[in-house]
Image 1 (cartoon, one colour):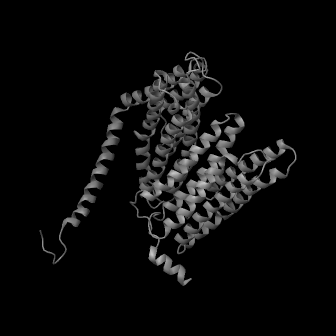
Image 2: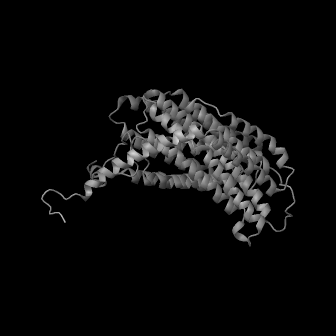
Image 3: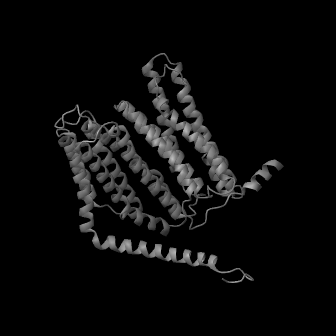
Length: 444
């Protein structure tokens, strides 16, 4: 025990998060490993796109996202880059990286070796235990929060047992169909258990110390996920493996433009306004909004990003392939994935807007309907034309919002700039003390 205390003493203790705290650099470093998991999900699914593999990708994404939500709950109470905490987080990062590497084998043929699923399940257990140990340390002096944490103990135990069962039981079944159904059912049960527990546990005993930290954390992971989609399209479409052609360059530009339009859809006014709404909420309502809007409704946006990245990757790959005529229609599920992913992203964003701002933008509802109507049209078009159609719709949405929401956007941006300027002025005033000589020190 004495050695343990000395070890903590040299590294420093855990530092609580202040009400105005923001995301620190170590958290961004940690998030890069999470986004690597998104990349692995995309790459593994792209090898053979079918309904079953898409279901597996969404199940893995849901379990992975829940572990990230738990990670954010911990990060909203303690600074992850201070004291002894980074040591624990590095252990969690290693487990998360191992989990990501094992994901392609998590749904392998049940008759094969169970090493891949076991590594995935074991890594997940380590991730959750790291978060549990740190949170127990944080709430050691708070009886209410310890009681609330115990209410989540069944979810942690059962989800762990179910994932281990999903790795071991299917291999013991002789019928491949029954084995696959059992495995998928166990994973689906884990997802229902995790997200159901978050709703049933309620908001009593929890708190979001820094609304700024919570909103910034989710905004950053969404930006990184959008960036990952660009990387996935660039790597998977083999643009680097052959000389550039004008269709390939045009497709790459269109991919950047419609991804930027999707960034604009959230970060122009919905994200900033929701951030203010979370700041304005207090106590239980703040916790409920943080859970519903951010922990739950960001998931369909992330899922949408992965789906449209899969579709865009396949379409760009066909456009860049010199052996495929440019006039050929897009093949297979390319167009449904591309347009469907954007629809999923927009629907998630509209639900987010409804939960935080209590409003619905009918222009966005109309855009979703237009995109749905464009799917059969896009399936009859060449890949480059389908990609152009999607880009026109997304950019059109952004342009119409800029034209029709000018006053409200300007008012919101003015508030955000004033807040930022005030905050930066206070920071500058604090740092100005560093330029002042210490008492007794001669001035220069």
